[in-house]
Length: 405
Ligand code: CS2
Image (cartoon, rainbow, N blue to C red; front, top):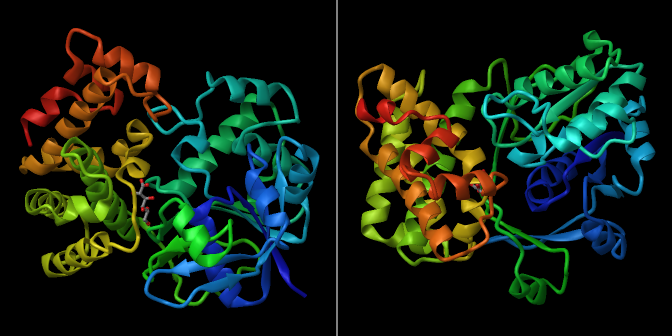
């Protein structure tokens, strides 16, 4: 009998990554949840929840592992019931950084309006609310697997659900729940009309051939035997390598690239100066990593530059630039703090922060709508007496820290 994963956040990344691994595994099925919009359910339901995965450079694949998709606002009780259901062994999430409703200290934001509402009702809206109300009813062990680009994603999620449960006075048997940390990687751009035309599938997803997944082996129930997944005791070294080098360089290329007038990652990274700077940032980040040699991180950096250069991916810089105020702390700031504490230089990481502040100033000057959860705060910072320092404060960096790197 197939076993079930309940997956919250059925966007492109999940459909290119976890869905692909699970289909290859063969013994599990996935019930999806969309937290807000009905668009993915509406599109996929017309095609039996199957879709085309267009792996650039390889043959297209048909992904058939999704059972169905619940749209949370229409099916609140069904989502809670599915979290509690003994046949669901894993609840996984790809809800992006903002889906965790955190403060800048990575704690549950108890002033977030949706969290405040969710605390008062068992008809929640947020991922944290659904998890907590589902766990209250849960009788058997459950693994909750965060697959988002946050440093210590499982620990952060666990803390947020616990804080929610405490504030809502919910009783949960924590001995039956685990929250492994994980590192996920596969560059997956937003779908385009060209992709839909080429595949004849309006729900097609494009991705790159490369993919990586490292998970802490802390499952409290059965788990899929996913091929090519590394199950490890501690994911930190992998997660830091990926977040600080890949995502760090990505965000740098996004802001510096947009300022230089480029649209796609492959264009920005083909600019000799930007490539050198992105490489410099990766080398600085590499100095903060434990247990890897300089040679290994150099090989990794070169492989990343090659992946970024893939012209078939058409990965928009603006997709990466979104929600910078939530991404930057995980991607640059930990490296900066560690370099500063060790009195090491980090001119390219510093440059990246400067480029982000310039990007914010320029977006406001152009009167663009800022694509950032903290758009209001960014606007206020840009209009303040000292935009540079105020913006840095938003990502938790004091200007004085930068004096040391
Ligand atoms: C990107 C990531 O949009 C972004 O912020 O940096 O989605 C990146 O493509 C993935 O993490 C690659 O695994």
